[in-house]
Length: 114
Length: 112
Image (cartoon, rainbow over all chains, first blue to last red; front, side, top):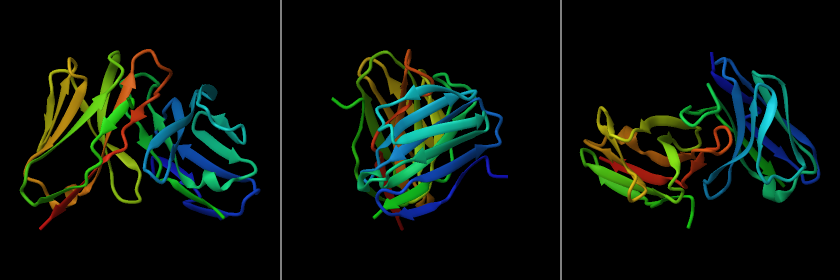
């Protein structure tokens, strides 16, 4: 009964390929997020969706496109992968989008672009 | 100045020791503060929220100093299982939903 689950856990692919990472939460939360953790371990927000609506879109290349078919799912599609995209991508959700809502993270997808 | 800054460590302490981490934030309007814990190759998990009056959860005590714009985490009687990276997290009021800003983390290793 995993709360926030993302697949795949590991993803190894070549430059130029297109790949997707899926995320689902069964907590009934309204807000979902994608975070990127680089090799220096900084966690940075990429996108945030509230009830299927995009509310945060940080300075992320437009090769990255989030898709939220419903409020329990937020998938991340990446086109034309580059070496610099190698990182760990975490999906997360929170009860509300406000300031006091802690995040519940998925277990991460380790993306390696060769 | 970084939005959230932590001493990356590593802190190496023996079991039973008391260890404290500090974290400074640059946005004086920040209203919500958290400590998260991240084990090696795992996802971050909420350790505790930080309240204005300070709060304690077992061996863990969190403090907030608004005047100096820093928060702290104190761990008493360290256990081997406390070894992890501790992430200071700030959510500035007025920003978009859940735009939490993470520090780079402080690495703690507790040895026998």
